Image 1 (tube, rainbow, N blue to C red):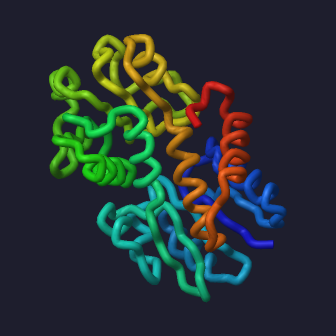
Image 2 (image 1 turned 45 degrees about the horizontal axis):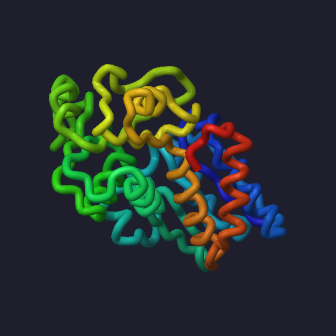
Image 3 (image 1 turned 90 degrees about the vertical axis):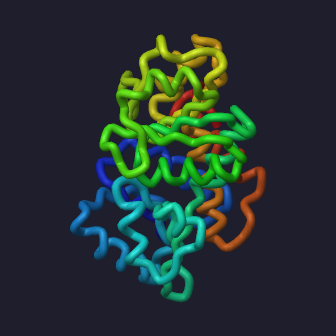
Length: 264
């Protein structure tokens, strides 16, 4: 049996164990995926533990996606560019980092708004950086980051109403709405021409997605991104292609965990 961990903080809500353990079962593998709540000062120790022979690797989520870069033996160029690793695989005792979020986000953007004219990204963390790269790859003409922290290069939150009136795609890369009825954007500011992608997946759909749909806009919550990055992470750990059958098993596990409203 081999182990995989999700390294993060306050991530009790994660649906990843249900998805990955269903995949392992379908492949008749005795492996196990588990959640590890890791404080910042214990991250180095947790990553070092992945070098043991019992480990396939790990997923990484908030707030550790950037911090793990300096703890790995090698990082793929796309992840280094995003300054965010969400997947670690162990190979011959070495730890290799990658970012499977970026292609998964790109797939969701393609579904909602191929070649956006002006995309707004809410947030300034690793998820927002991954979204920005996915948007660049999609050929977005303009990308504007908006954050409450006024991170470098981002617009002020107070400018959001005006920006929303100009944009044709909104991506929520903040945790606002996770396990709550909160939304980062008032429903009255949504409109049919503004497609919405919310990376939050619990609840599914989120309030932001529900209100966007009520306004007549195409909108999806984050379960599709979770599935897309998940099967890519699984391929990295196992070193082989994941079949459509296994992907379907993972999607069914997410629906069972999140409800039939999940956008997988």
